[in-house]
Length: 338
Image 1 (cartoon, rainbow, N blue to C red):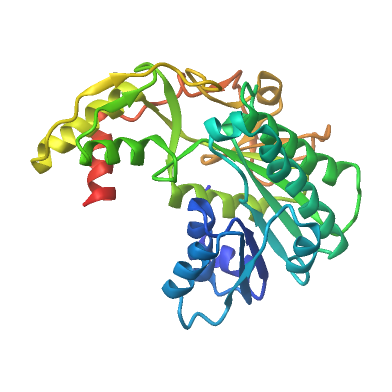
Image 2: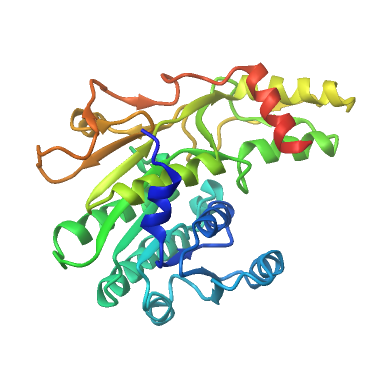
């Protein structure tokens, strides 16, 4: 069920909203979407001064947008930036699987310690709602990034269940790959193709959940609207097989008259799965759904949750859901790169 824009506008009206990691792929789209609904203030919090500078140039004259430089690891800075906030979208994280694999301590400091800093500061400063952005890699994690995001999810669950603070609701929104985000496979392949290099394939049968940034942000706002605390919202996503993506990139190159790149099998990287999961079997047993979202409530609560209804799902894997076709992928590339 789609929420009418008017309801979202009423939800955000006169709200002070903080976006951690606000200069990242999801953060930037989140800020852009939030500003459409005229909140009182949107604060972009990130540690990258260059990206903040470029983002400031884009929004010159936007009176309800401000920027704060700082690191989610710095508890004092997090304490400062959360003061007076009504709503927080926590997108700040280390997300690159290979980098996290070789720097596990750094991944833990940002994804776990940083999350704890935000939780504690939000409670102290009486923030209304805090929405943690998570990943499919948090489900049955086999890599450092996934393990840290799994723990972060548990931190937000426990913050809501155990702290019983009475004024701050915490929830998690979990989704898979976002098309065009930094470090994702589509920009990698397009860069390789444009520079005359072969497309590096880990495994042609590998599948991934996929969604546009705009879709992910829109559904995250919907989850924030419905959250009363303690939920894990999971976005309904299509999937993509690497083999189809490779062929789509090659077809796209043919259509625009560019050289068709060859391919090179490099093997599965450390920490990679052949398919991703967005829900465990245990979660599936208690999942509720509408046409766009699944929701899982950790506490044993059989009371109705808005319009969401029970499902008959047993699992939610990228090799089992509807896959985007090669032709659909070519059209998507045309939208993104022309």
